[in-house]
Image 1: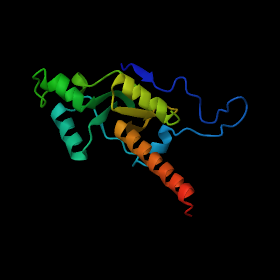
Image 2: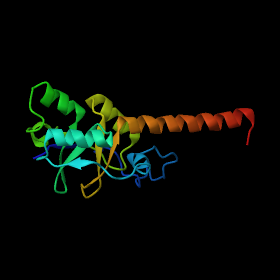
Image 3: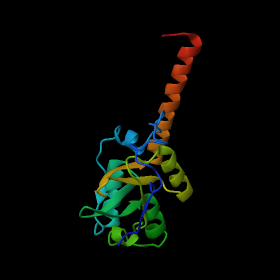
Image 4: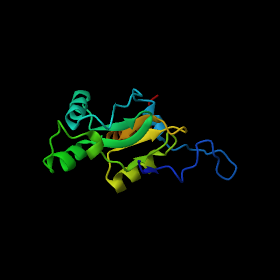
Length: 171
């Protein structure tokens, strides 16, 4: 039912070597962010009411949930969906189901997707969340643009610290 698009179609698997030689510098991947997160992805079913899903999102302080039908990712439901497809269309959130208003065309990534590629997809498609699927196409995580920004900030802070140590000769 869902049209999935994979972010990582052209990305090589991390074990792949370029020109027969191992890579000297490994680019950060989605896996690096997932290792810092709890591992639990908040999910809802397509039959849940928009009101109940919004209450879950508010309680968890999150802007998006994965919509699962059993073990299968069937959509994403976000604050934007509530604004565009419920509030703007004057639907009753108590009687409207998540399945009626969720985003069905979901862009997904894999743990080995490079962060630069994930950031580019999020920017170009104007999306804030990417579900992460493992090799068995099971949901194994979710990253947000906020996660990417926090990771990049940490990387910059680390680089600045190392450069200061080098410049000022501290150990």
